[in-house]
Structure formats: structure tokens, C-alpha cells
Amino acid sequence: MTVELETPHGPARAHLHRAAGARGALVLGHGAGGGVTARDLVVATEIAVGEGYTVALVEQPYRVAGRRSPAPARQLDAAWTAVVEQLRAGELADLPLIAGGRSSGGRVACRTAAETGAAGVLCLAFPLQPPGGRPSRLPELDAVAVPTLVVQGSRDHFGMPPAAPNRTVVQVASDHGLRTDLGAIGEAVRVWLRAQA
Picture 1 (cartoon, rainbow, N blue to C red):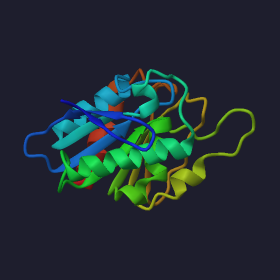
Picture 2 (picture 1 turned 120 degrees about the vertical axis):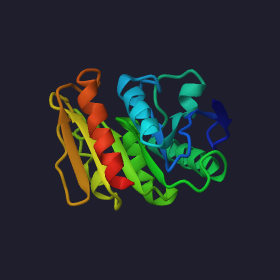
Picture 3 (picture 1 turned 90 degrees about the vertical axis):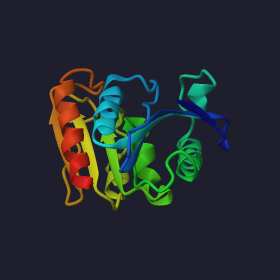
Picture 4 (picture 1 turned 135 degrees about the vertical axis):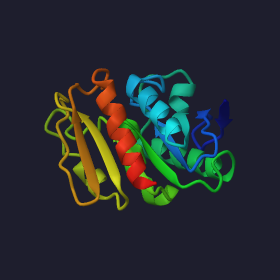
């Protein structure tokens, strides 16, 4: 099921994968230049539904409009927050929420975790260290106050985030695309989701 949702920056789209008798909700965003059919997002969705989570894969307004270049962070965050609020008032009502996404989508989930009331954050391929000597994005991860899972490729050119008291980091044999070692990605998501239940 696909629903279109209005945001301050144009319509977004949520692809819903329902779990029978759901015990939670998982809302996932895509990477900067990709979509919701990325392999790691597909695997995470399948695992989460199997674990009793209804999943919403969210396409940001710039992707719905057919653009590949991402919107500025403040627009991504505002659109994401609007989408999550509408989902929580409708299709995901009364379900504990885990927010997340791959790469840029994970960053958005981290930055908005408190505002959206997320009980946990799932990051697939967190882009820790941008190129060109720009500052690390570790403060975005460190600011998350709820349990967080980062699934990171051992060959990710953005680097490896450190584990922390509230943050589990699982390395898998892949690069930033997380297109290989899908079994390990799925198992990491399964184990962590069970621990959150």
C-alpha cells in the first residue's frame, strides 16, 4: 500500500508493509541519491515485518518530484517530521516507533529522533566522515538519546562509527552501498529489533 502525504516541501510518499498484529512500527528513509528499493532497505523491511513491525519506506519530496539531488538538511528534516506525524496519527497509530534509514536517511532520523518520539534509531551505512576534510557527523549520532543500531560496511569509505553505551555498531563485509553480505545485515537488524521488543 502506498500513501501520499503532504509536507511543507511538497508531497512525500510512504510505502507500507503491514505486519499482522504489529507490535511496533519502523519508518525508514532512503539515501541521498537512491530510493526505497535499495537492497539493505529491502532486507531490513523483510526482517522487520517478520519480527512484527509494520514498515513504512518513505520517499522524500525531492525524490517524488523526480529530482536526484537532495534537498537541504532542514527541508529533509521538516518533511520527515511531517510524514512521521501523519503516519503516527493514521496507519501507525498506537505503535511504538523506530525511525531510521540508509545513509542520508539515517542522518535525518538521528537529527529528528526526539521530535518524532522515536523509541530507537536504525542506521544503515551512516556517512560518518564526509570527504574534503569537512567535520565528522558523529555529533548527530551522539545526540540520539534512544537505543541505536548502526550497520556499517567494513569497507565503507565514510569510515566506521564507534560503539557507545546506547549505540550498537555491527560491521558487515560490504562497502557504503551495503549490497553484499545481506544475510549479516538482516541478522543484525533481527537481533537488535528483538532486543527492543
